[in-house]
Image 1 (cartoon, rainbow, N blue to C red):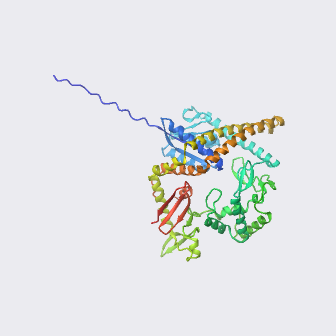
Image 2 (tube, rainbow, N blue to C red):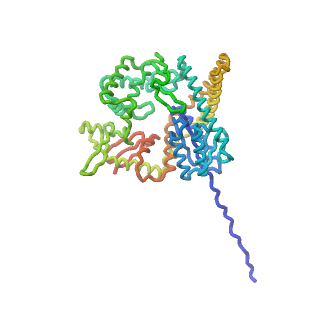
Image 3 (spheres, rainbow, N blue to C red):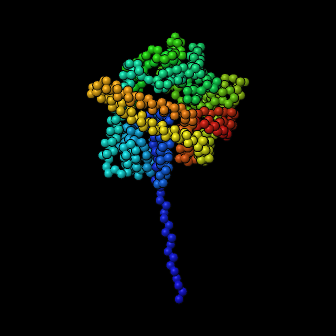
Length: 519
């Protein structure tokens, strides 16, 4: 009888699905040093998540210059929630409850929603994992503490700032165009200051803010952040008393709901004469103000009425590759057909000086969409290589050290705020408060010095790295575009150069310049 051997089927193990983990970061101001902190956070999370074999990196979501007290004001946060709803994320990691939300109602509402979607959240500082909670009680208590801590810190900060306003020791951290600032002390940046003087001279000569902005762009004069000049930028310079050497403190304030308001007499203001060296005389400043005010009256324009807000995605972004002029939107008619075009203002003024004819808006929209689709298709080859070049080992080490310094500075700030609270309630002797506060200030100053040096070393490419990461995040999560999205123009495009009716270059905020044909 023949022998028969039974061969059991191979046991094939189903691959274990990895947990898709995203990170959320936020800084509350848009200043350069805070943006460096943001980049440090992004590097930390990217490396931490990628190092866990059970995790799959699902992207970084980050907001800058935006308060955490209202979720609606954080576009990246809302994109992250939308991606959770789309089933792209299983877990979120964030630094603390205060980074995630400083409003108890919002925090509980979002966590409940995410848990309903099967998405857990881990808060590093509080060591709190929503996936391991038996009830919402702990989260409710801790989020309430975060909210009350936000209010307490805000009030303590306001008390300290008002005190420094009154005794003239407040240090401004950001200098307007024309000045540099170090340790709160302003010094004239002569390369920028000459253009400030030129702006006031042209205003006194009768030129409008729009014309001045156009001429500065045509001359290739860079702004503080390297972007384009706009008439609102010019008006901001003409209205800024700091160019006379004086300084008005508390132009804005926050209410108890953390809403920012322009101070129109609702709060005390403090005016300091001779705060720093002047660029413009008081006489010229006041004369320019009268001209601006008179022009506004003639046009029936009032401050804050939104009359000059950009109405179209390409507004103030398109420039002529022949004469350097900006472009103006016009509506044309061919029989019953109505369509929009963008025309060179230099050509409209003098066709002999500039022969560039108008381009159709729908053609420009199609070119922009095609350009983005190319990046979506080839994101790894193009953007990843650029990002690798922008980031090096030294860059990463500096970011790690900045992250460590930020933690230590936060500890110093918390201790100082505790001292201020105790002092303001009369529980601490002034001499002891001064001694302890000085010790903490000296430690913070040492850390700040080290931090400033690190920031100076890496700030040259920080903006480009940030813009590249934003573009990579978009291209990595987006399908091919089937229609034009105007919001993406403002998000990614710095300016557009038109060379002919069929050729245009998109200069992106990440440093890429991509030429595209207009159909």
